[in-house]
Image (cartoon, rainbow, N blue to C red; front, side, top):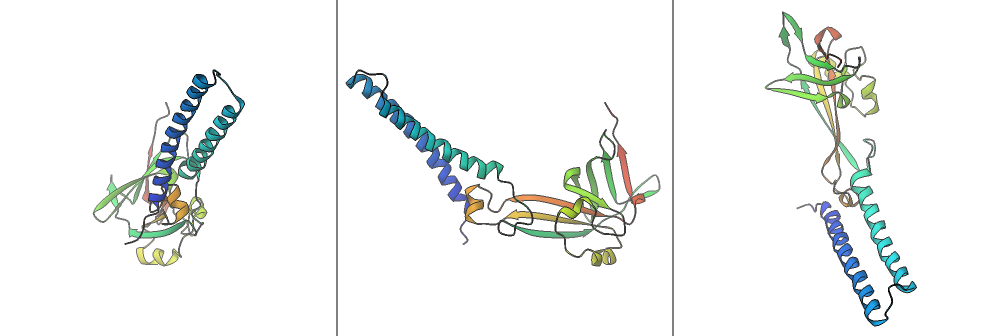
Length: 210
């Protein structure tokens, strides 16, 4: 059974919470002792120790917060992610005797798509516009999708008659750095490349501007 490195990040977060409680109790205890024994409300050694303890806790929180919430990863970073591809042929739909493979909802600001809806055998999928794009030209990879690594798509053009969806899923590898951020095994990002023979096979729904 493979070890899931997310336990390491979970343990460290628990240790940080325990350390915060310990520091609060330690500071309170020292200050009470100083007031009772030394009859002082402040002392330089105590203040330095307070700053040191709080500083260490803040640094630990900052590092873990960055690793957990802010440490974005590139899909081309093979040390941290691995890629899976799934290719499915599209199923044509009809509306008013017009056939289409994908439905695209346009946002009030023109040329920006809110989402795409497409059909495959036995299923219907809707994906947000920033995680998908349509390719209807000679090149199977659309301009927006070129930021991601893709396998050779020409063979799918021939196999599926230019009507398919290729979905790329980038998943975090199960290693120490990903585990520290509680990401090991989770999906980092995904992207759907929707291939159609031409733009006439796209049914665009226009949104009204408010």
